[in-house]
Image (tube, rainbow, N blue to C red; front, side, top):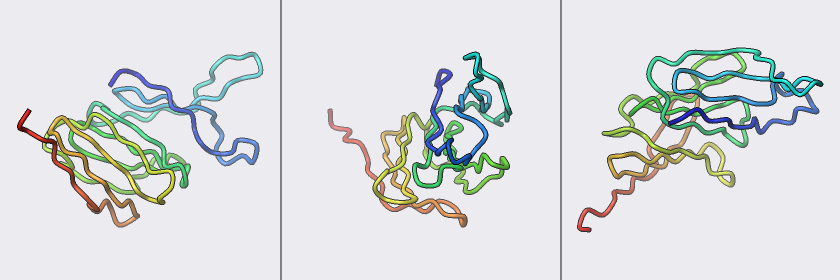
Length: 139
């Protein structure tokens, strides 16, 4: 994953979080605020233990950021940088993409180089597999 900017889905008018944008780098993630002069002011940076290969916001729990570190999935509470849920070796190979279902609370989907798409239920107890789809190998 190259550096990627993902806008925070929270309502900044209500002050849900003090930043307007989070940039996810391969090495970590940082929160920024856009100043009145139009410049970015870095508010925090948290390093990751392994390179980040994908990231997604939970659209309903806007303090939760899911990240993929190679084969692992981690859901981080960015208000205090704590780990909300984690699954080591979630895929047999690098996770390439992930996205939350905006219509179904706490549902995260990941896809990896291993040809597997996994649908997860995310809770404070961890990640539980809801469904796994294997790619066709006959082509």
